[in-house]
Image 1 (cartoon, rainbow, N blue to C red):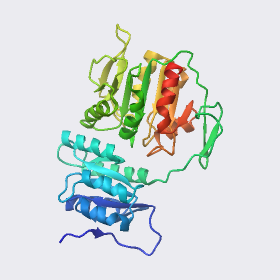
Image 2 (image 1 turned 30 degrees about the horizontal axis):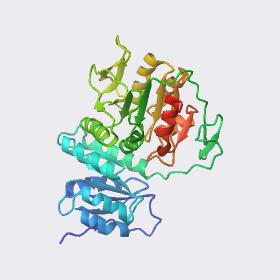
Image 3 (image 1 turned 90 degrees about the vertical axis):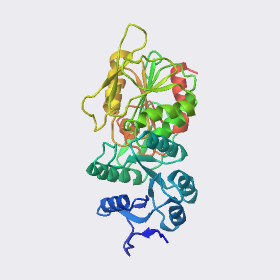
Image 4 (image 1 turned 180 degrees about the vertical axis):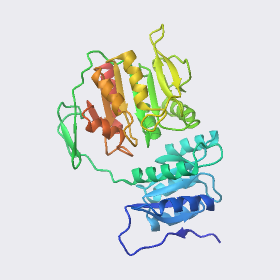
Length: 374
């Protein structure tokens, strides 16, 4: 009879980040356990070889994060995911996926069901080595396990008042700037990373029949970005494509930067530019990079860019957003409370670049107001 394995208990105060590993591969469970156990502030509280045992154990183990495989006997990850969230609604689920069309499709379904993020297993078709996997795993676990602070109440309307400030971190504030663009935007540019796929779909559902082209850089590997575009189209009713060389932007359509390539834009003879894919070096450790995309757009659109920075680790998009603002365009960001990780949006918000910092649920309304004035 297979039983769940419980991590060592300590009489000392529990670490801040409690992790449960759910995978039918004993090798993968051992690799993840060996990777996380030496890390200060992270504790592996248990492992399970299938979803059924994980669901039965989650209330007892009380993990902050579950690292979840998809293909397992008895109960697979997709079946277990909603049950895990029902037992512990605040748990964050990190999908451990393979780099394949099936792996990408199932991962997108898991993200739609409430998973927080995904990470590629090493080996097979994956570009991820064991060392890369271990480094990325620790980085993601630390980011997902970081406590989020809540906004203090504010008096301004819709988060757009000039000069309004909010305490977010002990030594950081958000100072909002006025909307400066003299003309309405001609393109919507979105940057996102950790937690981004679900945030994108939630926001884009409110932008059906949008009058402008939408360009998106989401940090994801190849194969996954094509599947993301398909899921956006299916779930949001917006024509959505993975960017391809020479593809001309069209109003009302969305374009996702392909994994492993920067998406930049070249002005053509028509009103709208064409996509150019670039294999240049990563920026901010990212390819595709939000900064690269935004710099390219500033050269074409000047002040007529509306930029939205959604949840994600790191600060990719900060310097590109600065260029958008310097050119006269506007930047808005997802707020801390609704973000999975307030890294990318926090970077632009605390740099004083945003004309609005709002919950995810309000962003579509603000975007339409800035574009149509209604």
